[in-house]
Length: 392
Image (cartoon, rainbow, N blue to C red; front, side, top):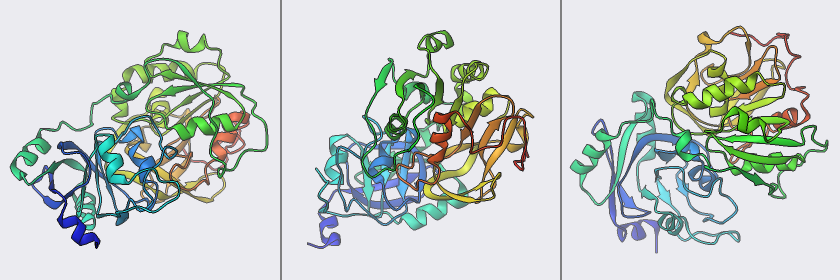
């Protein structure tokens, strides 16, 4: 049976944006409506990692690659124990799937995890609309009730001023010991940090695996942990993880980061953790028009002049003009010149906006984990020196 013939037998569905735009398709997941902020991701692989990335909390993810689901789903390619995205929007879902690693098809996996999805959408039109007008609220509605879907989309409050990290963070302290899969390159040098504490703002499991690969003991703690409780764990270094929502709304986490920066140990932040470092040092953040979501984003290393291809997933950025003198820019986006990397001029603190764990995506920024674990910071100039990295 052809894909189109099969699609005709599926339940109709609509995607309705807050501005009234309507996209027709067919239901792929559960039968409940889903609302959220509609974003687009340009990666051509890794849909299972994307859906389980908690940074997508309260977002409806549009995948611009047209054929999704051809390799099915499995138990290994997940980044959290739950689905982060509020819903999924695709052009075509390949049925049946074909992969020796698959345990079930994408539609079956979506139903199992109670995720609403829509296929048959003109994702090129949708992406152009989001690029022109900016991200906006939307509703995926199984069935064809456009009026109800429009009302639900307009009722959605959005992610601004929402501390979503505290909602998705672990509520208890736990240890992690699982390494990466065999295909991921392993570091040759042993770790200088024997115990790393990861502050969980919505951490991806690949981050934890990469830290284990580097020979350290990993302890994961809630975003709400106090400095006293964290330091009682005797960390050699602290990692600030990725996460969802408006970074400026995470007031408790910002206060924790500000206190951690004053401690005599290395601190490394990515994604939301990057923004926490900036905010803790006195910078400000702002909402982007449509964010960075994909696995093909070029980033300039300001120290070496090299261009690195990175994985990205963020809807907020650090305001370059607000950076204090204590922070130095180490990386810039070659798409829009937004700040991608920062280091503290006087303390062993550095951060990267993208996702160097590369799940999914390129692995060119994995050396950031090595620099953190070796506490060498060879990837950056020595503290207190500019060495070509501009603050503005």
